[in-house]
Image 1 (cartoon, rainbow, N blue to C red):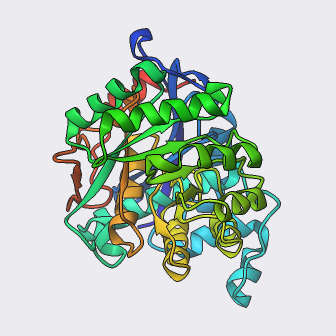
Image 2: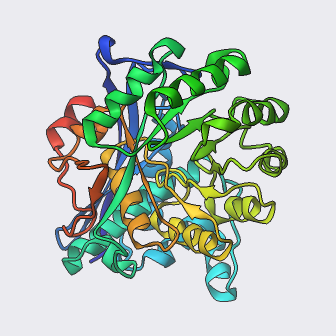
Length: 388
């Protein structure tokens, strides 16, 4: 049961030119992530996923080094079942013995950023191993799924005003989605342009399809409030990341000025960031990214905060199949979980990395009962696209 080895692979997967899209992050020419593999002495293998950036086109060599050189030496030889203890060891480093003895954290300087992303991938891999060892899906280890299937929303929406309705309607047709998300903000240059695109989308979709908007944190507080006023008649399901994640008080000001639900969290690290969002009453919906926030262990704590503060949970699932399934398991077992993101951008890491493909039928995704994450990694795919 002891950990024999920890590896990390930067996967750098080209996207065919015809399927690339452009947003405020630039043109998405590749999809990148870090895949974490943990092997135990008794022959089990667990997989996790870590990201150095929310944008899908990013360099990841530093994150690979963090996993293999900084954290792996803390793990090799340790009992893979002791997931909670190992999380504290990675988070508090040389002072972990204080944290474990005294009941509160003593985090190292890297309590945000790459170290937490690396912990995220390792933690998820440990949960995958535990599920496989017990022949149980992770959601069962978290208390069991609350529902056999969950609604999903189609995530994309980059087209200009003249084509946005057609683009979003094609999403509805592809999976029977009853909810879709589009991008707004800096990519439109001016707030009125974003508002016009939203109005065109709502006109095409009609009143019965939920419509979300994501600004990727690119608006000022004043611009975000103006946008909310301009789309007041469009009945948005939520407005995601209206302002930069560093401007939490600005986010709270936006929420106070509108009745459009506000969603955020994909760029946040650990429960401590989410606690501040809750205490500021800045959001209606938490969106932790399981490859960034601290993994499954920390996402459980964030889900508990959500329930305590009457905030809903909709994990950020723009990434590979491993982080997608990690988020699905957490959402399925969390009382606050209510919907899943399903990327409609070109994403080989979601659809080609594993033998199992996430399927949407009538706008819903079934919660699987396979052991662990429920995934079989295509190691040929890993070898083909691993950097270095």
